[in-house]
Each structure stands twice: as structure tokens, then as C-alpha cells.
Length: 151
Image (cartoon, rainbow, N blue to C red; front, side):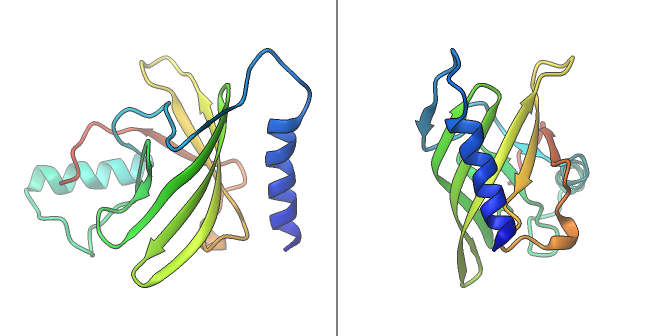
């Protein structure tokens, strides 16, 4: 519970902190994203599956990020229903579903422009969510644009 409060407090401080020239925008999608973003490992797995002509299945499903939320293209998804954007940071409130289980999850996003056309996106998970604590990375989980159609 304490971590959830700290996470929520960090989000509030980010968006309600000192006034700046950047305004806060409330949306239903993350407008930074065009196409599919995935972890480097996840993108490689999707590309390999598509190149091999394998059909999508529960065994080879990979989670990826779109402007509307996360999905694995199979049974799991987190649909954004409120996204707050300020500059290169955003937070999203999401309804997540995996099989018959439904939960409310918050995400924090940080966009970093690198030398490529598309920015890298770091995803920070609310530690009170259903995310596996062994997979939460304190520095955020890197997601990069992935040129593949996950069909």
C-alpha cells in the first residue's frame, strides 16, 4: 500500500507540481505512439514468429504497446481510459484483463528522443498492480518502435 501511495504521489507531483509553460492534456490514448512499441526482446520474438510464418498462439504471444494500451494479442490487455500528458511524460489509468481476471493499473511513461526518427519510451509500472515484482525494473522498461505486424 505504501508503494502505491508513493507511486501515486510521484504521479501527482509530476502533473500538479510547479506551473510551467507546458500544459496538461487529458486523453484516451497516448498520442506519442504510432504503430507498435515493444521491448527489444519482445520485438525480436514477434519478428521471428512472423518471418517463420507461425500463427499467433498463447505460447508465442508477446505483449506490446499501442496508443490505446498494452496487449499480447491473445488473452491479456490493458486499455487506457484516462491518459494525462505533459511534455515528455504521461500517466495512464488502465483497465487490464487477463483471461477472466480484471484489474485497475496505472502506468507512468517517459519519452526520450534518441538519434532515430522515433523516441524510446520507458514504462514504469505501479508496484501495487498485478505486475510480477520480479519483472519490475526501477529504471523503467524500455520499449522501442517495432516494425512488424503481429497478426
